[in-house]
Image (cartoon, rainbow, N blue to C red; front, side):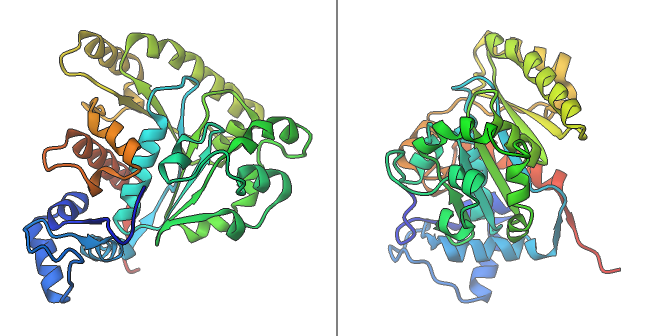
Length: 328
């Protein structure tokens, strides 16, 4: 669980997230007389999350960016592929970089919420209250740290399907609810449950980009064709343009022939949806992160392949979906 009074980033990690040199970070810190909260005197002194966000936000000129697409869903019919882990890593690291982020747990299993310290047995408001009762956003959202808000999940979502089916505009209630609220955030990320459900239909309609997380194993590719066909039929039924699709190969193992075979198949049949020569490699750091409830950047070592891959994916998104503003 993230602890604001104890967790923070060192200069090296800030440089990695910012994609700038450590010298650039150091110069900004010196010029603005910023102080670490860690008084140990070591080279790895950490700065608070709030200070780290300020540093990264300014050295990367976030305020000078125009965001082209902001709503990302992590999606697959199959469980266990790593949707929740990637949603947690991507959303939390983009928030650490100084962006204002909302992450939504749309899975009744509430694994994402558990990472933030919530129990699915607790009685707090969720998407159920938003979609069925129009609950106040301020009553539902939870702040993890400044700039990073969450709508948690609990067992109430298990009864949402029947109640949604009775409502009008049943597939677009999420989009309608967030029409104004989404303007408060730079990015919104949604973790979904592995089912074909009305809730997932709402999430798909709400999204700008659908991230299909695919384990790099041959059997994981079997359902991919079905998933894409289902999405295509849904968009035709809703008479709307298809959303942008991105396939994220996950849990890649360098020495496993099955992973290599799966990547070859992805390149052969779905090359337009994947980042060239990229996959999230299998790493114990991802499991440790889930257990601790902390983003990789708050604890991972310098040579962490998990952090390297997550940061590469984030910068790919930022390059794709943000522009530097120009004065007309």
